[in-house]
Length: 607
Image 1 (spheres, rainbow, N blue to C red):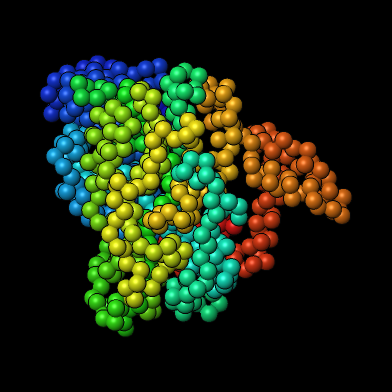
Image 2 (cartoon, rainbow, N blue to C red; image 1 turned 90 degrees about the vertical axis):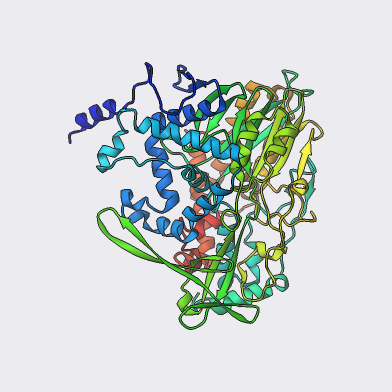
């Protein structure tokens, strides 16, 4: 088809946005108005009708995105995307995404089940409305499939799938034969002290494991190694009413997710007698899980990097029919999955699972492999019970209580209410176990690294009205490593949190306009640090000296048109490549432990 024909097909695929429709399942009239930016504003006479209309509006705006995310979650995207999607589909099948989502939806309370039923009724009402389908379906010669309630859980799970600790553990496992004792230096930090979230403004030293702490895991991994043998960030902050320009708290959130078209969020507004909420929605999911305000309380999140994934090195017998645990051979679970692939024959995937979870890398037939035990899959999750409760919360304390049981992904939940209160909660479910689990895959056969229950909701770190009235989070360490409960090993270095905190020292930046200026800040703290190192260099050849002088004269801002900024990145990349080559760590690309998709790139970890 010619380009102009596809343009016309795309134009004709836009659904009608005006007029009246009779939708099955509605109990009364619903008004759907779109503002100048196309954002849907829904008003209904009941919560049921509001969620049904939200599902309809999501499908109207983002149907193809919703279905592609559902397929990615369930290990069916290769049916559309071809062989390149096979590895990710195979991982989704190994994780047992469908079974986990069906299990969880069956355990939800009546309110959450009703919310999901209404939402998917709205999605399916759009499918039956006669509106044209997105043009991508014509390109693929495909048709949309109906929605079921558990599909919403699959979409939500997929958006935070295996974020955080699992990749750092795999990286250190792969690096252990090369790095030896220095593997304890391969931690996601900058070598300085931490600026922790709680206590507010406190600095803390990091606990660094020694090889004595890691000896059992290190010995097991080295025995399994061949003889020659992480992601994104966000910012948010809150200013108390006593310090803000408006006299009310100011809350700002800045999710750093992958640039996509369309983006992972969609703005929306739904109102009914029970709630009136505006914020960022997730197409395919009812409610407002991450960013919103309801006229009484506002909330936003960053990723905490809590350690919610453990890796176990398992020992298997001949034939890999049993795995060793406490001197006994236990039967493993085995099943085969068939993955359809666009343009070629289907491929079979064998799934092997131990008491700890599915094998995600390595070959059990060779005697050892890595199994994953993740909070996202190991036990029944009731996160969706939180969604309707959050919409009705009218205060910071009520919002925090509404999130009891949230476990799909870990968050720094910042909130502010119209009574002037502000707060932070580490919103997550985190198992209790030893800190050594946070560094490497641990031996699965000893029984010494098992989960010992859960940290209760009441014990999760939180702050209410933190002094001095300012608080920023930027994926930095939530609490000192001396905290009685082990929460995390790898967090982002604290320079972004420090930068936001430093900017908030200026009263002019504590209002709405100031928040926009902070969001747009381009100063690179790591670049300033490199300038300090460059200032001490001497005796360089002329070309290198010219580059040094240019970088020292640069203001450290990553502006789009800055040649010095581009040269700083080029220099840093060369240094990382040299470090990787000199240390041997760059040669780990393709190593078994780094194979689970999307994979772990050694140079990215060294960056």
